[in-house]
Image (cartoon, rainbow, N blue to C red; front, side, top):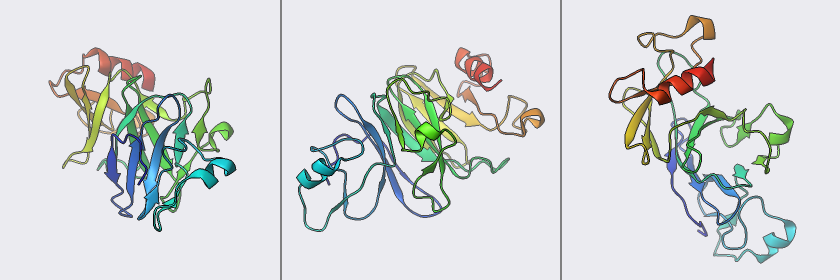
Length: 213
């Protein structure tokens, strides 16, 4: 109820919880946990609600307003999102991956112990929001994908990223291009994208490898 513009849906494979991205108008894009009888607050608010706005949100039967789990004050147009389950490593088992259309970024959010919110190292992120001009280094894990429209977990456990502007589907591997084996120097924790045309020389792959290093 009261969702403005949602581009992506994903179900947590452990809890069964539904997650969604929601695009704002001129500000405050969101990542939402969507429980039963969820009220996102639109058209009164996008982003965390203020006390005065909370009083203005219409009551629809027993639908209950819930703040977003994360917000961007400056719009990035978040789109697809999904969870990964890499066979090679378990480093990303508690991660939610989200793509955007404005900057072509791939974001990684670490779930808390209850898997109903996020945990951050940077103190300025612990309000669950990126203000204008704040660094996104902690949550960006890849870039150069163009306008991402969808992220899906394939039957092989890997993530597949659809880029509308690049006309390409990328497969995300937890390795550094060494035949699918974990990178011992990086404890198997680096991600690279291999285009479906199987070229590790693609500029996007090289860019991500440089970003990783």
